[in-house]
Length: 341
Image (tube, rainbow, N blue to C red):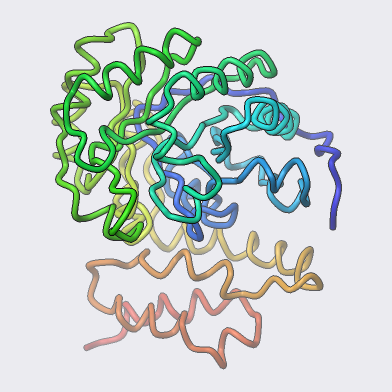
């Protein structure tokens, strides 16, 4: 399946608050994960995995950009450093119906560094500004930047302040601040998410120095109490691994942070909503290699913290049962929570 023609049903960009969002996470926040997260929270902003400009300029556009209309509001995160290629990719993102284009200036992996983008772009703020301007000239939706607070041992506040200031002059109004340094050599991407210390006060200071900008904070945030604290200082909070490993943490977000008066869905209601979606995707893409595990793997943490959660995960990880390709396996897994210990 390869096409550069966007679906005719692509919706106009939505106007929604980025008060809460789920971070772009490679190999995790694919379109099936995002549909699952949307069943838990209707308003939390969702982000794609990083898509490189090369994948869009030279590759299979539909494979990288197709998504479900239920995902809105949803942002496309791009990885690249060539203004022209980023402009082309951003334009494709808007044509396919995304609500925001986000530029990755935070990923520290060596593979990304070899492509001269990700966190190493923080060392070239004027290039980032040129990239942002090129994308803003190509689209009418928001262009945002996700970045770290420093590179390697560069811990001065001036470094990140000047980076944000330069990009803001190019017209970027929204910055997602992962409140850790990026260590470009010697640490793996996983270690880069854990070893450099969190310095939330840097993001707070950015908001004080740039009150006209929308500043979102990211990094190590797990609870509503922590979210409430951060929202006293910045405009929004982005959750990463916690949203993936414990997705039901988002169950009350719509009511607590967006004023939604509808009752939150139960875990059982989320499962029942996902079963027909999973079946539809297997029917559409099974002939192209899509397997049940590709969808259910994102749901392993749904019962996190409940008695029987281990049985739920074990059932959804049973290779023989998964091979049958029946999404009703979710109901069988959920039954583990109702069985006596």
